[in-house]
Length: 146
Image (cartoon, rainbow, N blue to C red):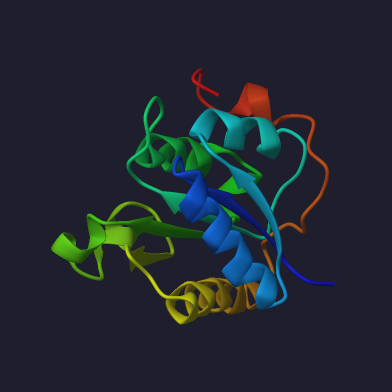
């Protein structure tokens, strides 16, 4: 069974391109164009990985990620940050933001697929990570904006 990746980006074109890149590499994708929409999706299912834009209107990717890391079920879901800001802060930017990996925009198919493969391989070695499952508790577990 292939892994499911939740793509969260307010730019629908980038979300679609990211989905295409990952689907052609064999992943299933779900897209959300806001952090609030991503929260709603996480209320129903837990993806194997999240590709998250940082700069979004409303709840930012940073705020979303901070809330995600507080959730008892979703905190172990690997997150790949994507943003134009990453290029200015270097490769350690994602780790400082509680993410597992970071990719600067614009990115290539190879960069995005490699990032997802890397975090999923790391997750596969983590036996404490719960499997993807239907969710019923997440909206109450995340911060109020969700």
